[in-house]
Amino acid sequence: MPGSKTGRKVIVLNEAARKVLQELLRQKGDPYVICGYKKGQHLVNLQKPW
Image 1 (spheres, rainbow, N blue to C red):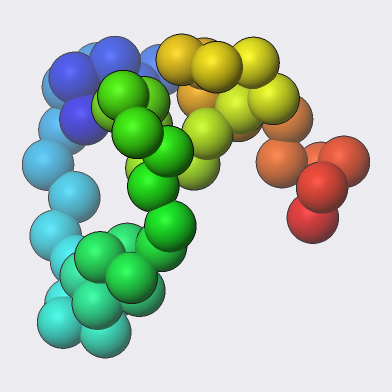
Image 2 (cartoon, rainbow, N blue to C red):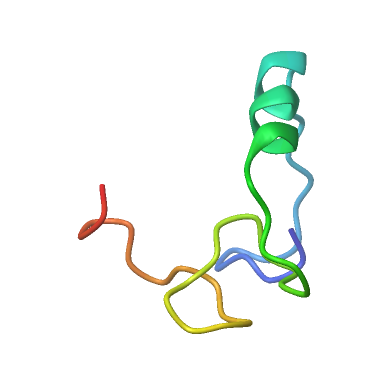
């Protein structure tokens, strides 16, 4: 994660986490795993949808 608040860091995911991420539906042309409400934007507030 190059843009975290505390600086660049590596996050290791186990097999179960990788599988969940691989199975998420993706939006064509959007680079984000969790897409925002605007095309090409990431989700910025997890409180509301959660």
